[in-house]
Amino acid sequence: MTNHRLQWIDNGRGVAMLLVILGHFLVLGVSRLSWINAFLVPIYAFHLPLFFFISGYLRGLSQKNNKAALSQVIKKYFKRLVLPFYGFSILAFFWFKYVISHLMPTFSYYEHWDNQFLFSTILGLRDTPYTAHIGALWFLFSLFFVEVLFEILLRMGKKGRFVYQIIGIVLLICIFLTVTIQGTIWPFSLDTVPTGLLFYFLGYLYRKKEQPFAPYLTKSALLFTSLFFVMVVSLNYWISQERIDIFHGYYGNFILFFAGAVSGIFVVLVLLKRFGNKDSRLLNFVGRHTMFFMATHQTYFILIIQIILLYWMS
Image 1 (spheres, rainbow, N blue to C red):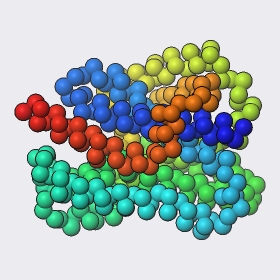
Image 2: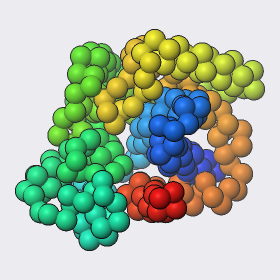
Image 3: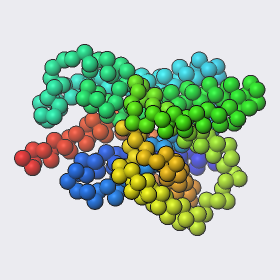
Image 4: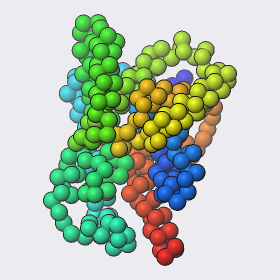
C-alpha cells in the first residue's frame, strides 16, 4: 500500500510541476496569441493550490513530525526549503549577471551591482526587477511558512484536543486576510501563506478522511466536477477580466477562486486515484525532482528558449 500510495503522490507532484512549467512557457506567447488564455486560465486556477494540497497530504502521512519537537521540525523545513531557496537564488543571480544580461537587453541592468539585488533576495521579494533571478523559487518560502504555521496550530490544538476547531478559526482568518490583502506582495511571500494554508489543510484533512471519501471518486463525479470547474473558472475570468495569478496576488472573486481550485484538485485526484498507480516514468521522475525543476525551469530552460526565439526572429 505504501509503495502504491507514494507512486500516485509522486505522479501527482509531477502533474503539478508540469502544469507550472507549461503555464510559464505559455505566458511567453500570450501577448501575441490571445487564444493561449484558454489554457492559461484553467492551469493558473489550481496548479499551485494542488501543490499545497499534496504537501498537506504528505504531512498527514508523516508520523515522525508528530513525535519530534517543534524546533526540530522547523529546522527540517528550513533545511529542505529555505536553504535551497538561497542556494539556487545565488546561482541564478550569477547566471543572470554573467550570461543573461549579455544576451537579453531586458536584463542588461544585472551587469551593474546594486544593493537592491542583495536586499531583495534576502527578503525573498517577488515581482520586482531585482529578483527576476528568483523565478518560481518564491514558492519555497511560502510553503515553509505554511508548514511551520500548520505545525504550530496542530500542537496548539492537540494540547486542548481542539485541533480542527483551532485550525478552522485560523482558516477563517486566512480567508479574510486573502480577500483584504489581494494584490499586495509581502516579503518572504507571506501574503500567499493564508491561501496556501487553506489548501494545505484540505490535503491534510483528506489524508485523515481518505477511506470515507473513496466512494465519491467515481467517473460520474469526475465528469460533473470537470464541468463545474470549467464553469466556475470561466465565470471568475469573465467577472474579473484577469486570470488568477497567486504570484501577483490576484484571485479575482475569492469564492469562485476557491471553488475552482478545489474542483480542479478533485479532478486531478480522481484521475490519480484511478490511473496514478500506473508506472509513468515522466511523471514519476518530475515528481521526485520537483525542487530541481522548480528552481531551474523558469530561470534557465524557458529563458534559453526566449533567447533562441529572440535571435531567430530578429
